[in-house]
Amino acid sequence: MQVKPIRAARMRTLDLAYAALFAALIAVCAWISIPLTVPFTLQTFGVFAALCTLGGRRGTCAVTVYILLGLVGLPVFAGFDSGLGVLLGATGGYIWGFLTAALLYWLLTALLGETLWVKAAACVLGMAAYDILGTAWFLVVYNRTAGPIGLEGALAFCVFPFLVPDLAKIGLAVLTAQRTARFVK
Image (cartoon, rainbow, N blue to C red; front, side, top):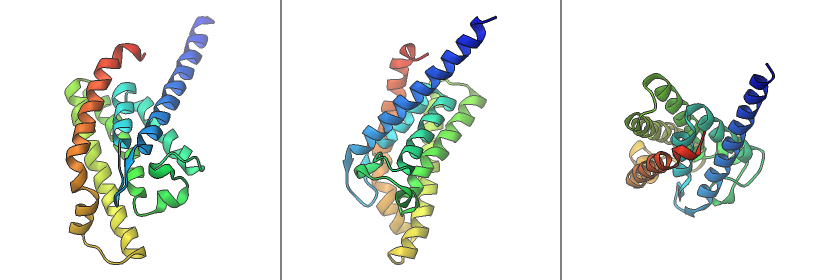
């Protein structure tokens, strides 16, 4: 009788440890940055590596922890930035979009299973989700704070330059997760 509660507690502790580890990985990946309007970082690799390696529930937990760390002031976002101002700023929608992508990944893998192709498709759809949310957010905030910009301009600044690199990062995340699956319980 005592074995089940102890084992369950260990699994919860292990889940939290994995989420914390991958939240830290996302932060480190965010610091590797080429500054542009929306910084080119490895942050998306960290997000999708967390999801593909840990699964939907624990991966979403890791993304949530990452966002909360930035919200409370730890410099985990691109450019060692943090705070509510970043999350409400012009590019904050992309960070919130990571959470949307994680929830979508969790839903799709829960419904369709965790095969390689489902994971890859869920990541690509997640990428589309954070691009849509992030670009919509960018349009609203940028038009209020910096002046008018159309959808074409926002896409040219925030999406088109990142499509191929983001797809490559998704591919790398899926392959990395496949290779490390035996090490993650």
